[in-house]
Length: 218
Image 1 (cartoon, rainbow, N blue to C red):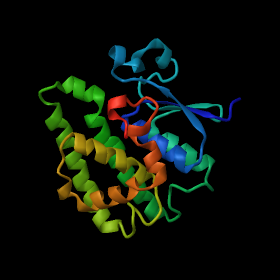
Image 2: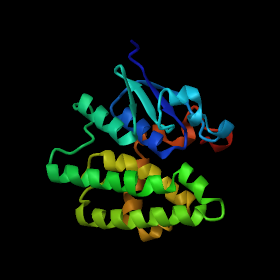
Image 3: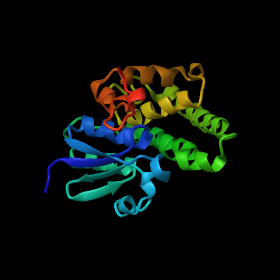
Image 4: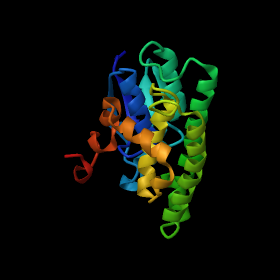
């Protein structure tokens, strides 16, 4: 069995982006297999990929003899199977629940409402407002949580957590949907700090193997 994990990913998928960051932090060696969400009607809908992930979504991570789907369970598995390498959850239960709360606002309350399949159903005339409003509402809640509980450089304290990993790709989506980040200064501050970290830079959508040439960072 190969020791190299395989991540089925799409360069601009925020959920794939999260897992790339977590793999970098956990120092897991991995290769990527591109699943283009737009080519040929969406490669995620192919029979070949459905045999790997019946939900027809990315990411899928093949690791330790397992085939794992859904970004938060994947990150929780990486944390639990490799707890001594850059822990991504705090030791204090109160801090842990705040990390999970922020992550779930993004994972359950924002991202699914503005993901590709929903926007395709909403239609081209409404998709920008739809995505904007979903992100804005979620960011209002996160900004309030951060103002109340963020006492360090990042979402909860001075160590990167799963909340931070979820935040950065969502801030990028906010820019795509023209959310006014001046309304969310705490989110913006934390995002700027996180973007400077090497594990985040390596996971950025502009430097992935399947990033189109016109979007690659020079």
